[in-house]
Image (cartoon, rainbow, N blue to C red; front, side, top):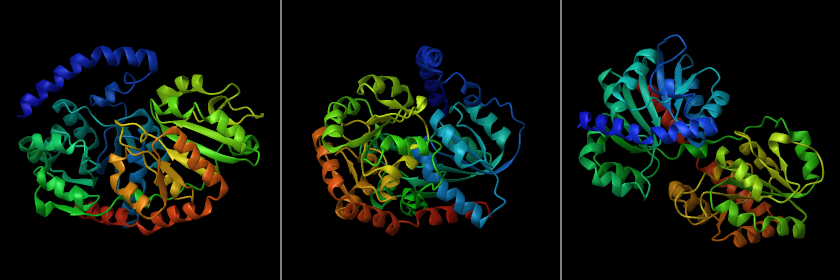
Length: 410
């Protein structure tokens, strides 16, 4: 089975290689980290206690309270932290300055073996549901103890995993612990072949997010730009959403004397979104103080601290199908009323809790986003306080997760 999988990986790489080369040249992606992903490193080899993997920015932020709790319980723990994306790398370097930060290896057997030999971890914790057959098989063969943390099986991926149950089950059986976000996820892991005795519900570590109190580098200029106005943040927007929302922002800003911050999710969309914005929009990358009602946040890692200026927020990736939503907790944790679209399958439990407690509002169009913001501009406090309370009441998963991981290091 694993030989066939390796052959399929090689074929997939050959098919995708032209895309990677073109994108690497045009956008500066992929080529710079290719050696690390193949398992070649410039740093000296060194052993580590724990390998933690988080795909991108959201998973990296979610890992922070888990890492903090691990280090509180076991201060001498040495960590190698991997991500898949460039933005995840940048976030990890900011959050974990004492850890070794590198890229997750491609799942070729030789790449994984080189990674394991170079970093020599004793245990492996993967955040959410990153199930890679060779990483799992070879790590276990080397003697690593494995845990899948904050595990979830989305509505969209569950049928695919179930169809591949014979293969997926062989991989999942190598994990000593599978820590599911909620009961639905626990049942789904068992349904696709995980041993029932290995799977437990520990809650969602994203609720353990603590706001970053450090001031923004651009705080003085931003406050001058806002000039006492109420602020709408359009956060983590995705293709199709920008085009819908930005048809309405100019009128909204004029009618409500508002300041609007647009934060596209993906850096490669910064230029495209800039072209859609009204004339006079200020860009974070070329900040200039003047009279404007719009800021394009074309930077990485600042959105969470931008929320402290918001009167209301829309969380993107949710208005149109295909993405599954993004995390509303960062905004709610600082008392910002949040709205999101109907497509929140990646944050199903979180969305349900917020809606059930009246701590968020579901919107189905760009017009409804603007209507929500207008109501919050009238009185944001009640919903903002309910959102903050929801976050506080659901904390605790990070401590439970960290305890299970530390057990594996005993």
